[in-house]
Length: 414
Image (cartoon, rainbow, N blue to C red):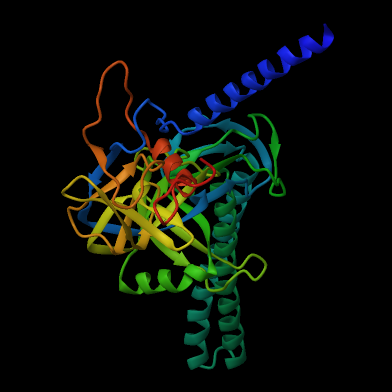
């Protein structure tokens, strides 16, 4: 009985295994389907846009720190009691505006003493001059000796010098009295008050009374690699260089100014050159101590061919683009990229104006492959769609090297 069962089961198992092998074989030879159910031999859906001729600015980018164009720590030049603070914190002031008052009593008394001393010496000088005239007249008649006349003349000269000395003492006392009224040395904005009324202040105070900063206009300090120094100096020699401050989103221009200084030496530690730019800061969007992105316009490329950066592919043999032909096939075209940023690339050679280049859908592309083209400028809109942002373009550009190879075939990573 056992032998009979073995004779029956063995052929059945062999037939079952053969059936499984045949099913696997048939499935492996069925046509491949695309990710959306389309045949891999059919047209590949792609987005395409026309290349264009445009003037393209050439920028050098850096990171800088804003700083006040001028900054002054207001300190007292005399010792005394602060009897009045004449400003509000954060207030805009003009040059010469009164900020604070120091008790002037002592300095007024010193000035009065100097004035009185000068009046006394002037009275003595007047009397000495009268006596000198008498001595000169009497000396002519030998009523007095010439020596007496010369002695009187020397006394007059001495008193004249004393009067000048008194005037110097008056000027000095007047200066100290004037310093009791503390004024703003420049036009700008006040910071936080550093001392309160009633406190004793002196010339040795390091903190001062308040800080005044000039922020309209405002300056920016930034460093650029020494490799860019030649291009910056060449552009600076041709004329003023426009400088933009860019917000942290790398898109919004906060203010536009001019490059004012290229430092006269390279920092050997970092291999960079420090530069300074000045901005009007009319809307007060820039603030001392703020970190900003800096962009220098050093040149403009006139009438060059421009394509979206997403259209430029990279492979072992260099950069290339897919150009859509009139028969709705694509041609793999090697290109030379002059420069590019996150949004657009300047094609020095390889693409003609108004040719359509593929910007998306590279996975299934190959040279001479049939495509179904949708214009990148005519994206469907509505609740189920969203516009393509700069971040998505950048993502495409970063991932293009893994989407396609120079021979137009999908890479193995796909």
